[in-house]
Image (tube, rainbow, N blue to C red; front, side, top):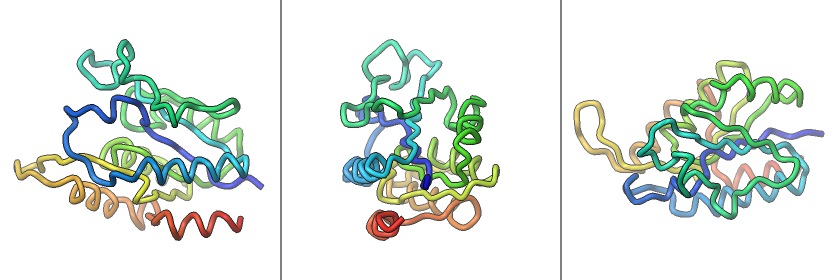
Length: 185
């Protein structure tokens, strides 16, 4: 039985660059690695989604180390690597065709940033009819000013993004409960 496909989004060295600012969920990588280990043990499909920025100054510009995967998140043999140039992992037409080949109906999403690539990808996946789970403590984001210029903390930005997704595009779950559920599949 194939479980949900795990999308590990933007776990590249650039996501840790200080210029991105203060982030929430300092243990998110540990949680992501727990989920990744479970997926590998169950031999469920894993998609590593890697951002290839078209902007020279980006932390994900391909001609510098920020483009590289973090050492613990390097894809293993048989795991799918998909590059994207925009926040949404579905904008490249490759993702959808690979999911259709696997004939899966659900996607679990982890990574960064919650209000950017996570939210964009989850919205599209939900709109395409996939059952989407976003693991709240396996995602993180950064402080950001709102439309009116008021600075919002990383936890506030994270919480609002999860609220935008939960119930309409995805189900947001905590890792403790979700891991316990998955271990019995």
